Every structure is written in structure tokens, then in C-alpha cells.
Image: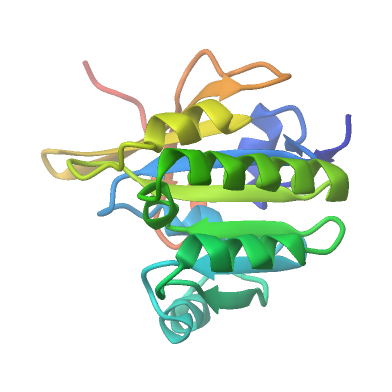
Length: 207
């Protein structure tokens, strides 16, 4: 099975070379975290369509320009209008072979009626398999998680769960991969350092 790089070397090694082509990935993270670094680094690997549902196209572009670590030059489209699910669906159908798709954030689409959202996810998965692409759905954790998040978690092939905690003077980031359809999920979390890029935190935990 061919694997697609995420742009994050440590993660690709843990996953046996990357993510299987044709996969849909959910990246669940706290709103006040550096989870966007995962999206930024993904843009360096292949041609990428970045669908934004909350920030404007200019805001996403400016954030990428300010990023210290290397980034790609994704096509950015704002679908935060009257019919975000319909607009996103049209954009997905036009994705070329082997492309990355980022939906940031998926929460807006999850707030649609369950049957319509399920149809969108099924169409997305079919297109990813046919084009051997890769999709990352960026979902926010917290008190206002949409009701259809369970549907997203079930339909996704892989789930990345980023946990960010403030412990005294330290900010601790741990990445769990509890689900890996067709592969092996990780038994342990990965302690990460999220500053201007994603790296392994080599500091030791003191009991």
C-alpha cells in the first residue's frame, strides 16, 4: 500500500512511512493550540486545496506567509457563506489526482443535517480513493463540539487527537492516534514540541 508523507518526519516514521493514499484523517485539537502547524507542514508535500470555513482566504494566506518553517503554496477557498456544504462538495469533485485537501475547520460542515453530512463524507471518501489523495479534517474540541463529530470520527480512516495542557510553567502537547483503519493504531502517545514547527519533545517527564 502506497503511503503519503504528512510533512512531519517523526509522525511519518511512527506510521510506517506516512498515511495510506486515499485516506480521510480527522485532526481533533483544542482551539487554543498550535494544531495549524500540522496543516502548514502538509502543504509542503503535494498540491493542496485549503478549504476555510471560518477565516477568510486572506487570513489563511497571511498566516502561511508569516510561518517561520517552510510551507507550500496551497489554493485557498473560503466556503463560509450561505451553503458551505454544497460549495465544499463542488470543490471536492474538482480535486485532481494525488492532491491534498484540508478542511479548516470541519465544525461548520458538521452542523448540517446528519443525512446530508453523511452523504458528503461518503462522496469525499470515494473521491479520495479514486484519486489516491489525502484529506485532513481539522476539528475543534471543547464545549461546542457539533453533534455530528461522532459521525466524523466513525467515517474517518485515521484519527489524530492532539491534547494540549498547561502544567505549571510548561505547555505539554501529546498526540494520540487511537484509530487507523487498515493499519496499526499507536499504543502510546507522542510527546511533541509545537513552536514554529512540529518536533519531538525529548524532555523527560519528572514524576
